[in-house]
Length: 101
Image (cartoon, rainbow, N blue to C red; front, top):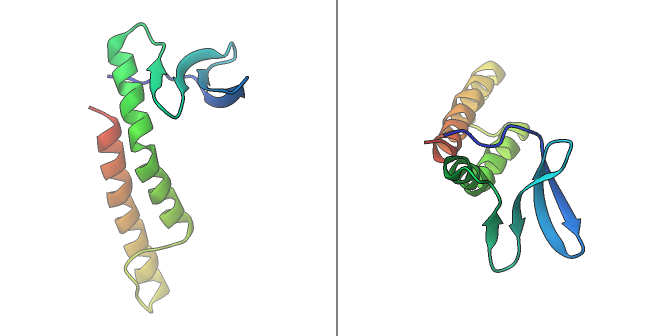
């Protein structure tokens, strides 16, 4: 399964929250407080997009931890950096696995 490859853009259009793709603004999904509606004709692509959307909170967590340099602490900076990289790779790979089949 492959998700929509164009750049995704979040828009608020007349109170409707839209996720669009590409320069032409092709609507991938609308988001309300009650539902998400997909506008992809290919069911496989819609499922891949949905998995990517649901994995995004974990991906954001991984990115935040990477940016904050979190990881198994060690007084030696090189060991701490290595531990951080290893820990973040594990977190990122888990998030990627959830987002892809």
